[in-house]
Length: 131
Image 1 (spheres, rainbow, N blue to C red):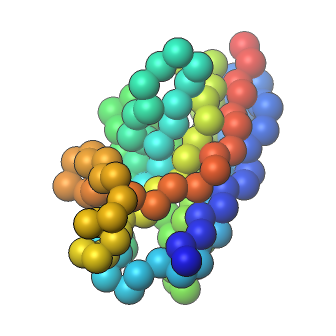
Image 2 (image 1 turned 60 degrees about the vertical axis):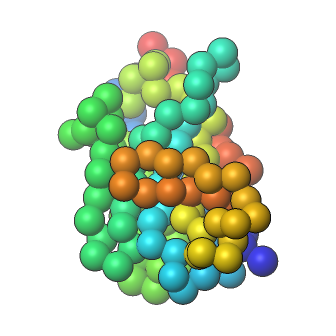
């Protein structure tokens, strides 16, 4: 029973910072990626950042590179997205995601972004950035 629960969203002014957290439980040990996605009203969901669990190698979308940082705690129970210098265009619902194991991938819809695939999703946390 995989559960991903986001928190830390809110309303901030442009230039401010937020740190999103994703509490992770029940993730298969073979799951190799976690990531953050976002979706603004009327827009398609887009990848924000990913982390390869085994190596902690990260990838950040060009639109947020230099401002956002993805990380995990040592126990791998929490995924973070540190967001600095927020801009109004960052306003969106932010979702935590994780890759499935082979068995789960046969039963769930797969979203691919970069070298990672995702099938588990949280409920999202809203980020609103005002000018």
